[in-house]
Length: 264
Image 1 (cartoon, one colour):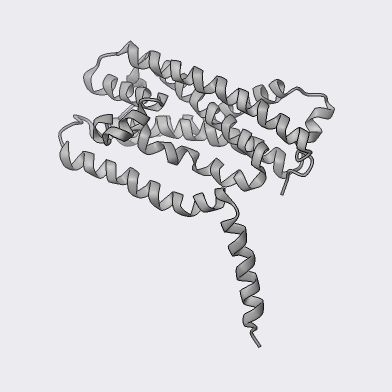
Image 2 (cartoon, helix red, strand yellow; image 1 turned 180 degrees about the horizontal axis):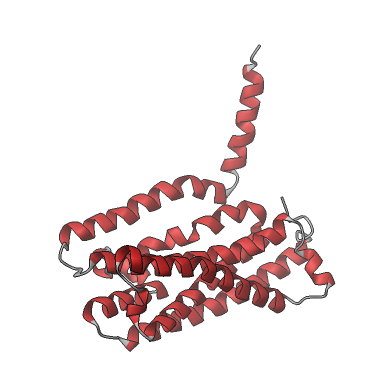
């Protein structure tokens, strides 16, 4: 016979597991909130600015490719770091011995290769299938990709720092970080669509300047060097902060002795 006591006990086990973990609570409310917010802004933009894009497919697909590169860079770094944690191999790396800087540099380069492997087929398919080419961004395409790459790596380092500090319970944040920033990044719509409060937050992110400049080049056929400058400036600030936070989290985990217990 089914026992209500046993079922209630299992319910309590999962209930306490969720309610005592902030990352798990955040994960529950995160996805529906972000999806509604992001697509709400996109719908609002197209409802009020139907003639904004002369080549809507080209602009949207180009921005989608740029965002996908950013997403793959960040997630790729997180996956590489998580694989070391899942296999309980992270502490073994120091037997080599390897330094933190060497580990980060290796993951950064590998994450770039992973992102490019996924990016190249997408770029090649857009021309024969949809008649557009991301190469229309010209020589500034390299600067845009470099800025996106730096920000993706920065997010990856920040999430990895959280994994060191809070353990595997922070893992859900690794998958949701990029989606959290998507509404503020103004990937598919100009920043004017956002409410004033959101605009102030967005201007603190390099994403706004990157995607605003991508649209500016594609639509107006002009280049605003200031957007590129601000993107690299904020990237530099956040990258330095992420590295400092990673070292801090590593030292905290080492002093608490939690590095050895990290794993599945």
